[in-house]
Amino acid sequence: MSILRLSHVELRVPDLELATAYYCEVVGMIETGRDDSRVFLKCWDEHQHHSVVLTHEPTHGLNHLGFKVTDLADLDHYQQRLEAAGVDVRRYSADEWAPGHGAAIRFTLPSGQEMELVHGMQQVGNLLPQTNPPPRPMGLVGIAPPRIDHVFLTGEEVDTVTAFLVEHLDFRLTERVLGDDGYQIATWLEVSHRSHDIAFLTGPNAGLHHFAYWVDGWNDLRNAADACIYHGVELETNPTRHGATRGQCLYFFDPAGNRNEMFTGGYWVDPGSEPITWTEAEMGRALFYYDGAVDQRYLTVHS
Image 1 (cartoon, rainbow, N blue to C red):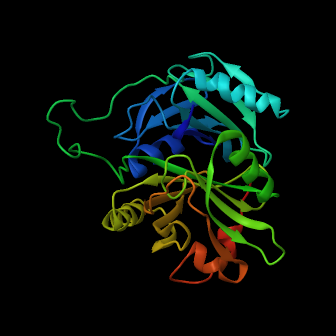
Image 2: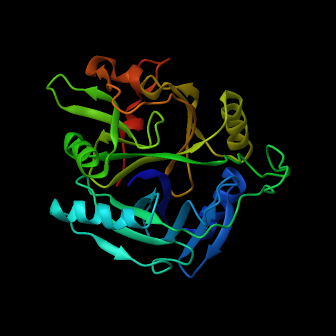
């Protein structure tokens, strides 16, 4: 029984066509379907039907996030565990929530975000042949990251939601910023043996700080920054690196106000590894290692 990785995010956007143009032409995602209020997108090296869903609503933010599980029986396993802990769980059959979406269970995290576990999403293939493929398709558009990578959320009680993920969903804590009062200000957790698949920062409940795409190396961050500037997308940070996770990163916003990250680097985690602790005094270096400080705007999140 296991949760494999981040599967998808559903974002609110007030202008569906503008957001679709941005994610297809600037980020370089591929549209795989749409209905009256939603557009479904995937990255070029993702095989499943979608990893980003844009939903037309008056505000921006996160509607739900989903993680992929190994087997259909995993949904029963985690539903039983969650309900035994007093958590309300909703069940979706394949294609019920959206065409190609797969069977799923959905529940609310203690920090207010809607989270889903999903199995059996329709496989549509990546842009490479299965026999003698090149390393990368020709003619990609925009930044063209191969896949989504992680989500960074906010909550009023980071200790509580971190414990929830560890105890009920088998996530492992890899790093944390520990406040002088003993409470966790920020945490990073994984299920895929990488530095993190999900993270939390003290802030408003139900908040999306950012979601991230994976790119293959530092030069891809530079190319992503070039693409943003070419398309008139303002950068929040230049390419830099985190202390926590040891990753390298670039931040900017979609037209609705949802923060995007391009991420690379990090490290591999063995089960049982002790989490790394950053002190409150070094929080700036944990988030932006070179600067050693965090702009207050980076800590401002609208749920």
